[in-house]
Amino acid sequence: MSSGTVEVRLTVNGVEYARSVEPRYLLVDFLRHELGLTGTHVGCEQGVCGACTVLLDGVTARSCLHFAVQVSGAEITTIEGVTADDTLSPIQEAFHSNHALQCGYCTPGFVLTTVELLRENSAPDESEIRQGLTNNICRCTGYVNIIKAVAEAAGNMKNGAG
Amino acid sequence: MKPAPFEYVAPESEAEVLELLHRHGDDARLLAGGQSLVPMLNLRIVQPAVIVDLGRCAPLAYLNQENGALVCGTMTRQIMAENSPEVRQGCPLLAAALPYLGGKAHRNRGTVGGTLAHADRLAELPAVALALEAEIIVRSAGAERTVAAADFFLADLTTALQEGEMLHAVRFPKATTNERSAFAEVGNRRHGFAVVGVAAVLEVGNDGACTKARLAAMGVGATPVRLMEAEQILEQGSLGEDAVRAAGDAAVRAVDPTDDIHASAAYRRRLTATLVQRSVQEAVGSGGSDGTGRAMA
Image (cartoon, rainbow over the protein chains, first blue to last red):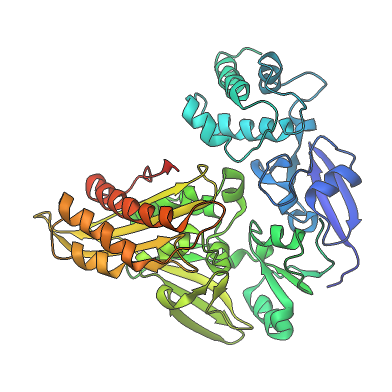
C-alpha cells in the first residue's frame, strides 16, 4: 500500500502494455498520456458527457470514472481499435456519410457507445437509438444526423455491407 | 480536475476490507463501482487518505436466494442484477427500476451496494429498498447487524453506516404470488438524473381488492419517503380511479420538496401525485412490472 506508483497492465486494442503510474491516474489519462492513444477524449471528467467512453472487457465504460490501477488486467478497446487498419468501421462510415459530426470531439464516445448498442439490438428504432445515446453529449450536431447515422449503420451491418 | 493523491489498496477478501476499515476509520473510503465516488474525487469534493477498492473482492459480488428473499452482494454490478432472471422473477420491482439508474456505461460498472451506500437523494434503489421493506446487511470487523431500509437512509449522502462499517449486502423480499409492482419516474433525460420517482408495491387479491400497499417516493426530500397515508387509502381495498386519485393527493401531503435548478417544489409535488397514480395503475395493469412508467418531464 503506497501513494507512490503502482504497476498497471492493460491490453489495449490487442496490445499489452505495462506502466507505473500513481493510483490516482485516471484510465483516460493513462490511455492518452502513457500510451499516446489520444482518440479517447476528456470532456467533463465527471461521467456525464461520454466523450471518454471506451469498451472495458467488451462493455462501455467511462474512462474518466476509473483509475487505471482499478482495471489493471482488463482488455480495453478505444476508438483506435474499432478497425484493424486505417479504414473506417461501418459505424464510422455511416457517421461520415451522414455528416454526424462537426467538431468531432464527442464522436469516439458515440461510436463506441453505438458498437455496444448495435451488438445488443441489431435493428433499433429511433426511440431506442435516442435512449441508447442519451448519455452522450454533442454540442454541435443537434443529434439528428447522429440518429440517422446509427440507423444507417444498423441497416448496413445487417445487410453485411460496409 | 484530477483527484488529490491517496493510498490505494485492493484486498481480495472481505476480512481484509473490514480490517482496513477498522484501522483507517473515516480516513478510508470504499470504492465500489465508482460511478458516484470518482466524480466526487475528480472534483475534490472528497479527499480520502486511503481508497479501499472492492473491485478485486470477488466474494462481495453475488446474488443468492434464501428464505423467500433475494440477497444481493454489495459488489453486484447493476447490469448483472438487471439481466438476472432471478431478479426479474423474484424481485420485479428491482428489475424495473434498475434501467433508470444511469446510462448503460454507468450500469455496466455501477453496483447495487454502491448506490445504496452512497444514498444520493435522487437515487432510485433507496426508494425501491424502502418500498420493498428490504434489509441492509452491515458488517464491520468481527460483527454483523441488519438495518431496515426505513432506518438506513438518514439524509442526502448519509446512511446509518458507522465508522468501520460497510454495506455487505441487501436482502430484498421476493414477490408473493399476489404482488404487483411498478416504478415510475420523470426526469429531464431518460437514464439521466431523476426529478421525481415513485416505487409502488401492491398485494391484490383474486377479487381485485388491494390488501397491502407500499409506496415510496424519491426526489422529494433528502431521503426517500414512504407515502403512508396514500398506502392506507389503497389498503381500504379499491384500486379504482377515485381511490388512486385520492392516494395521489394524499402522497402530496407527505412530501416536502424544495426548489432547485431542475424543478420547482410545486412541480415536484404535482409529479408526486401523477407518479403515484401512474405507478399504481401500471402495477395493477401489468401483473408485474416492465419498467415502462417513465415519461419525459
